[in-house]
Image (cartoon, rainbow, N blue to C red):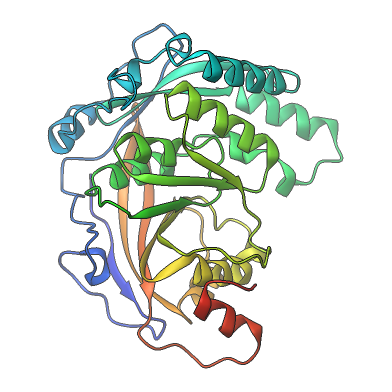
Length: 333
């Protein structure tokens, strides 16, 4: 792993800050990113042993977390087959799979992150499916099912969250979860996670993947950032590749203001090649952040991923109207 950037931004073009980035002064830390310990990613076919990326051996030494065990059965969840999860779970999984297969060609593959392996239901050929949609015409690029891709940034964010200590009562929310890779991994590491997305098909995949990995009690919900319904803010909000649509930037920042607890943290990850200056201009009106750029190797290919640790500013501009009041009590727009 190469640490390319260490930057603190407070909205006023602040000077770069070098040194350890310890969760913007909170309990969560970005110090787990140390030279030579880049997270790798591997995806293989069902029934085969995934090949090892060169960096995987480093992660295993750094993480050192035992595999998750089902409280009900005592079995290691990563090795849990659907038929062992109970009749009710099997029936629900079969129903989900039937609904998904009516629209998509899918397969279950082992997906390795660090020293853990998830069982992931995914499209058999994502690229070919996207090409067919584009060739058919009449599909706006923003309507393409990019939620069905496992992004490199998801591996980095999952690995980072997996290294954080499990705190009883601490609630985590994944936004734009897609198939749920990041949140599922965090849950297998012991965190209390809620997965969310607005796309109904994405939620079907997330529910199926939760059951494939023995996480039958996981909370998975449809969440519209525009929905004014009040809810209890979360201690941690996280997401990967959720800042690609410039038209959604004000909406996303407004949602983050009400979604995260006053002393909570937000963690976002994106590919370095995706520039979003307008998002950070909007974000730094109310939040401050720290950034690290990390090189992630996908079985030989390197991508630079930006990881952001974000917290509220101690003081924010005064606003009138329902938005300010809503953010104060966790509800509103």
